[in-house]
Image (cartoon, rainbow, N blue to C red; front, side, top):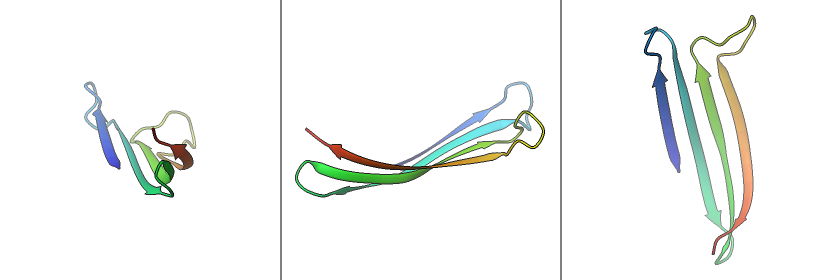
Amino acid sequence: LQYTQYFPSLEDKDKFLVNSQHTLRLSVTGNLFVQGGVIFDYDSQPGGPGAEKLDVKYLAQLGWSF
């Protein structure tokens, strides 16, 4: 599963946000699955001094489908 979203500013052409998520799901048994991925959040003009433009989050999930 992969998706990317782009949010441009309507007031400033140099300001935008990008959200992107990339995940992989593997079946363990018929209904049990594990899923892992990474989420990237990019802000072209973050607020505050020393603020990072890129925020990276990792995820791990265990689930049951029915």
